[in-house]
Image 1 (spheres, rainbow, N blue to C red):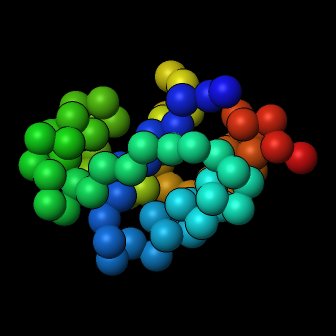
Image 2 (image 1 turned 135 degrees about the horizontal axis):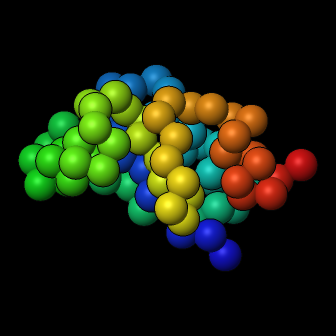
Length: 78
């Protein structure tokens, strides 16, 4: 099983889409709300070099935004 982490905010439409996608495909993920967690926000910025959400990590691969095709590829979902 892949390690999936998403840095998101509650008002981000694409964040909601990504989390719904993971739930639909029964993909376990860790969600960090960067709007209320300054430590995780700093961590996200340090790892990604920017502030865009969603920032998703699938194992060591980073995706900024909801790139459904890349997410499906990394998770080997057809």
